[in-house]
Image 1: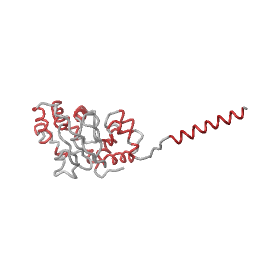
Image 2: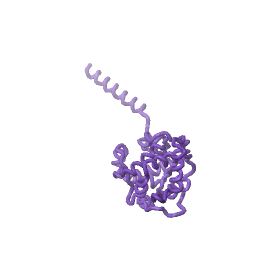
Image 3: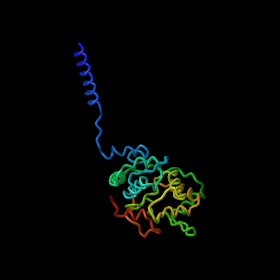
Image 4: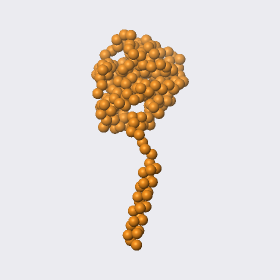
Length: 237
């Protein structure tokens, strides 16, 4: 009797294990599946909506994305969730992630409605398109391209980003909480911007539609030396 019960128990356990194995869905080991840890915050396919804090990843220049991942992993950018997620990953794996998102060509969401005053928006537009020579602030278009959609391989678009994200990142550079590779050109520029100017730039950029792709090159040399751009050109793991 005891042998019969033992055999029945073993058979039942085997049946349960077999049924569970058959019912378990098979997960393909692809880069798209692996980056679900990213898309939980940055949106499906990295297409973060314009009303959120997290930035879009899809279509950004590959070396820009790669060096941002390095920055989080190596401590130049401060965000514990990103740092912990990336800490065990190799340079090559980070470059694979960056390449995946960079190669996604997905339409941008509509821009956020303009929220600033007419005076604020005019100041923001002036800083973006002309800069402020009296403060030694170059125009955003001098580095990020005339269309503000970035420049391959390492300069990001400024359009299609949430207002709060833009404001937060410029503020982080201004206060020294965000760093790029030396010389940190964005840190230098942001420290010359008053908080009201940061708000004006963020308001104006967030209200502009994002169209097109990153430019292949700039018509003129960068107005400042930028360590992140210099390191990115031709630098792969």
